[in-house]
Image (cartoon, rainbow, N blue to C red; front, side, top):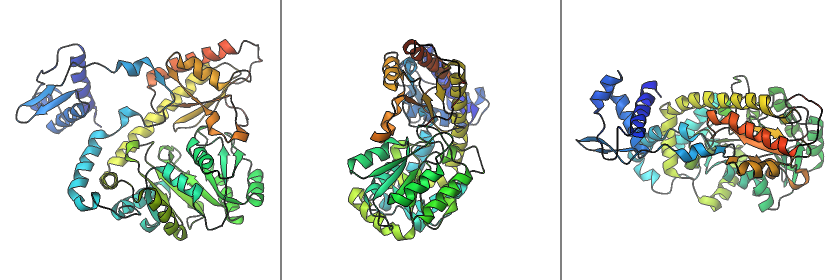
Length: 460
């Protein structure tokens, strides 16, 4: 996205904010603005299209662009601080680019998009997905990919469907993604947990569980874990895969934020067992447009038909229009450009958050230190509960997440907060942590010895 493009948008909004432009007012012509900003007419047209998409202006053919209504900055968004929501930054969503792709998809795939389509997903999209996954070190064929309606659909199906090892119990990290815990509870499946810290998991404990507890699959978030932000090393991933092979356990690898990894040498677990021991899930909900409800799963060949049978009973096929548009978006390189932008955006936000935590949190409060991603966890003093802090901050219109819902019942902890940086503005982060620290201090009246303000070897 060019700087000229953004300058034009900000200039128009600025003129609206101070009243120089008003409802019904005609905007400067495309030619006039292209001269004023020394840019191409296409840049101006694109900026106007973005303002039109935001319902700030509207176009009259052969006449020009006009103001829809008096412009008001989004004051509501400035009143609250959102460390809770886990969707992508709404200011970084590529609405206009993807709208072009949707229009092209309708033009190119008329019949395929509006009739029943391939249950496994549009083949042309699966070709593009297989090509894209190579950048994540996942090398496979389109025939092993199934397009699903978001990663949650895949997880829910895995909880219920039979696996080739004939087992039924599930192992998950503790804490872990709330969606898998909900599916396990809903279907009343037996689940075991294994403690995860920023130091990783106990591999001897993992082997014991694999050997003795009849595990169907081990659900793992290998990079930028939800809620800790933890990443496994390549050697840890390799060892986990070796243990899974040894004890005939499948691994369900949820690499939903793998695109954000600054470590170019980090490999997915899939790369250590590409033939089928590791089932790889790639979602687009957190790095792209969550409303698309598109993810893909790389399955062992022997599981594809069974998975499709269970998926058929769920929704027959995933939204075809979204699939067609995503295929074009991947093919024309727009997705690569989008990732480059958001990779820097989220890394910067995470750095600002950690600096604020290091500077402002009380000495007996610890926090995880992920290199990027969405999530950071704060571990409160023993006499302070997450629910207390959530309630106090809520009254100040600051929203954080109580991580207790991310544990199986027997592992539940009540002193962990999850903070998500994706939808909070950079300028709000320090103030939000300042208020959070004040809440901790107001509850934690007892004296504690000084301790480092970084994540220690805490069990979570």
